[in-house]
Length: 392
Image (cartoon, rainbow, N blue to C red; front, top):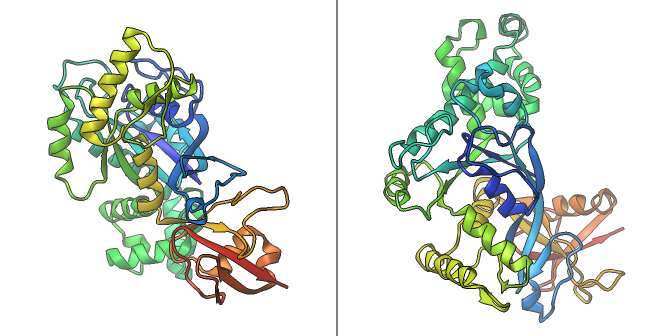
């Protein structure tokens, strides 16, 4: 799974990326600090099931802190996008192409209004961050439209003869995670004509927009919420019920994770507090007091919530653990070493194939480890299930 970080320059994407991954990246308050995409590992988190069994898990991948399980995934931070990026402004086409394989996007928005549409500093809150949200969606839609229209006349004529426009566009847009069935559903929803040669520019844009919405879901990270000018902008934008907007303070999360890495505090990402355990300078003490005040107000820095909402709400993922009814450890003695992300609605058979093809092919039954109940291949799994697969 790939999460893409997008937004205009100087919105705080690189800070958010570093807070999520602790990767070494350039962070600067000027446009195009990032040129080539940064890639790292971030983590979705859930309450671990190990506590229910009176155990401490030993993850093969990711980690577990205070019975909170962190499941790894790829995070990609691309360079800031500027208006007309889809036309190549600011190397926009290169940056957009970096996002092709992303399953969900986190749009990092400077909620303080202290940077204009190009990422240049302005007096807060003179810039409206709502314009940044609208601009990015339009740029992504226009990007999809530009790909859809490549060789359009030829494709439309061929589809008119063969009646297979969905197949043609599904193949053409496959690099954006679009498939034939998705195109068919979108054409039906928009009530487009059976003859694609008659589709207007507006209809093509509507199709591109709908396909983008289905393949590049967006979560808004309302960043820089620790600045005074951010609150009113956030409250106004949050009233738009169509947007998933998470108040975020990437710089505070980064400070907490670096302090934890230096053994100054105990901190579980996504938590609403931390425990000081090291010797602090007066400056560090005051800084952590300020961060705790923020956590008391917002409940968290928002960084972990942004990932979780992207994975579990937007992508409809669940986490399922392989395990045995009589034994939760693997051959190396690791307890509950694996945790798999599956799409909501996945069955026991889907899970068997996810673990290994041979388990799927030889599937006999599955056992719900928590209830010790045997289930069949069509049994729909639930979030945080622990499942044993019995195979030939």
